[in-house]
Length: 428
Ligand code: CMC
Picture 1 (cartoon, rainbow, N blue to C red):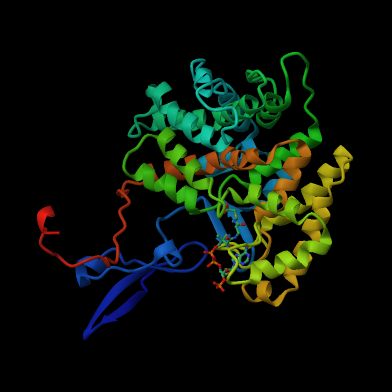
Picture 2 (picture 1 turned 180 degrees about the vertical axis):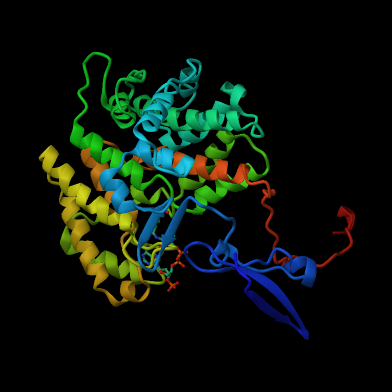
């Protein structure tokens, strides 16, 4: 914290507010007493200048294109770590020892199965239901099945529900996929890694042995790491807001999934690949760039631009490299990758994108990898939700364990009618 103050002048009165310093990033002006002292609110729709909480999990420097989890940068984590290790780091604050990591991975693997009755839940959905619709429903329903871990005041309950969410998400996601293609659900195999188990439940069939391809397993694990947490984005803020009322963690994560679904957020990976396919060939790129620049056309380059990054999203760099690795391993070529590379180059040299600091984000290349692995586009956001669950859960725990935690309750600038008398229906 700091001794600095900010002075606000309103009419003839001056007011002093404390200024806090974080360990990294901009200082923040503490305006919690603003209303009490001045009778005014601040106005910040979209929270472009508002720090909604204090957090020690993730730091982003959007101008420099830096992303840190608990101080470790995303390039190092995605190259050298594993999703289980990053999950431990986010939840506990430090990298685990070998024994701690084994213990954590073992604990997670013991929670991978779903209550058997949950399987019947899926049958209530249409076969063509979007898997994100299924995710919202089934994850919300977990609170009806796991009553023994919903007392949020009990740290042990919070820990168990966190482990359950991280462990069950791959099972729920794989079942959503299996249901959509009419194949039987596969039970988890706890001899496999977190990611290997997910791949098997998704692409395996009971009639055959499924061999996990280590290159795909590594790429998938890296994708999970890249999506694990991202500070106070829309879905994480939704989880925190839902959790601030004391709602149980399963309900809060279901709220996060609903928010993530939108195309401006997690839904962008699906939209980005659909866009690249629609563009189809490099000669059509200029037309789409012109459309993206046209104020009268709602079209945007999906997978481009970010609220915080005004530089290359460091996650997109790793994704681009991973596309090459996966294509080499699977010996596939996808014309869409060439379209993506050329679109990126053209946009990065276009004054519109340069001026507005619009760069590829994590979603620009992820769809190409996921598609090469065999996922249909509707599953892309589900994979995002699966990986982001650890971030949501860690952020939720951080909030609940803060003794100063309060219900989130923003105010508004009211622009409706002034008080007026009710007019009986006969006189209208
Ligand atoms: N294509 C064309 N123009 C764009 C784009 C784009 N992808 N993104 C932003 N702009 C323009 C926008 O029209 C605006 O122009 P002007 O100032 O002339 O009105 C300016 O850039 C600033 O955009 P904004 O919408 O005010 O910025 P924001 O911070 O509110 O929105 C965003 C950020 C990510 C929603 C936006 O860049 C976008 O819609 N991108 C496409 C969707 C996408 O890829 N989303 C994934 C984000 S990363 C993963 C995640 O968080 O889930």
